[in-house]
Length: 296
Image 1: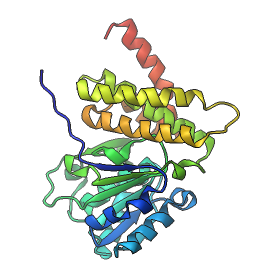
Image 2 (image 1 turned 90 degrees about the vertical axis):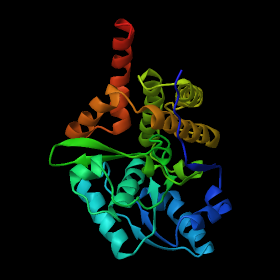
Image 3 (image 1 turned 120 degrees about the vertical axis):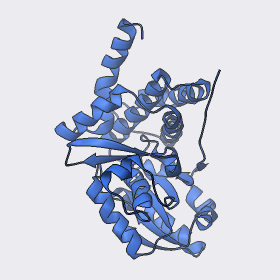
Image 4 (image 1 turned 45 degrees about the vertical axis):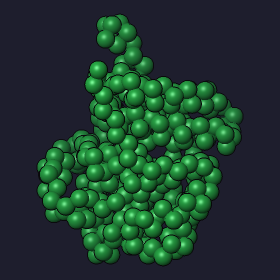
């Protein structure tokens, strides 16, 4: 039996973890660029908490808050120019999958002049800047993966930038930041995480470690999904289980990647503007039926 497993990200989890473990920020740079969108990081309180933590450890910062949903290559190139002009030496992604994925691409482009082909395929002349991730949704698991999914507007598709150097150095997971999410975002991101775990188990690259982690993720996400009902009331314990389960699902796909479900889902998102998690949910059941029917 052969086995490979890699998960170098330092994960801190729990209420108030940014404040309690803020010294970690000081280990990865002295001038940070905070990469985020217009709303989630501010509404959730994550941006304020991160800025306070940075001040406490004498790390200066600037903010780029123009990240779009499903960020384009042009979007991250613009953000990387901000990183260069500010002479940032670390990148902090705050938000859902879009800002965290964007932060990784920015970390590459801030120190490398690359065309699109080299951006996605390498090699890089210089190692990317260190990335720290602070998720405000429970679904993408981007805080513990080496992936950055970007929209290629020219070719009308989404592309995966993948490199071992893109694993975030640290991730701060506080379910408090998910409490003000719209209900549909909570549901769709949870479905995304559920799909990650199922796809990881079914992947040809799965191994005993990835499967063990994916199964534990499903044990957390499955029951929590059952509590997302018409009352639209989600208690904090459920939110924590969704966030922890999402992170574990991210660890699983960091080893295995996803399957054709995600590949097809990208088209639904690009051409039909269907939320990424919802797109996966629409396809997952049919995919499982196909796998079962053909005994794959």
